[in-house]
Length: 76
Image (cartoon, rainbow, N blue to C red; front, side, top):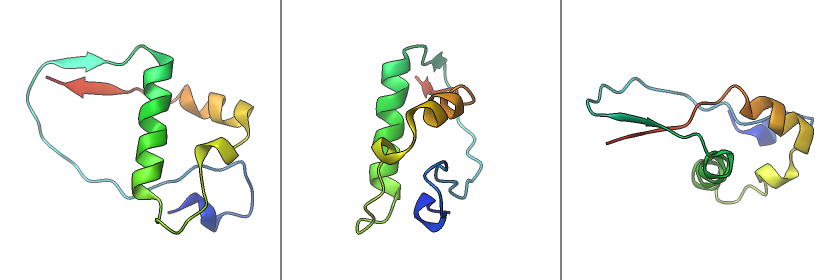
């Protein structure tokens, strides 16, 4: 669901997810700036192109709190 459907700026997108089975070495993203950059890229890619939504529009404290529940990773 696009964040643009909500009536508040204290919301983030909740897209539908699928299961993917992959094999490889997991590398956790420990760098907060790298994680935030990846989140910005995903929002830019998956929010409708005509949407004016950006993570920069989300309350900074709310976003920082939500980011604590996200673990970024890479598969080698």
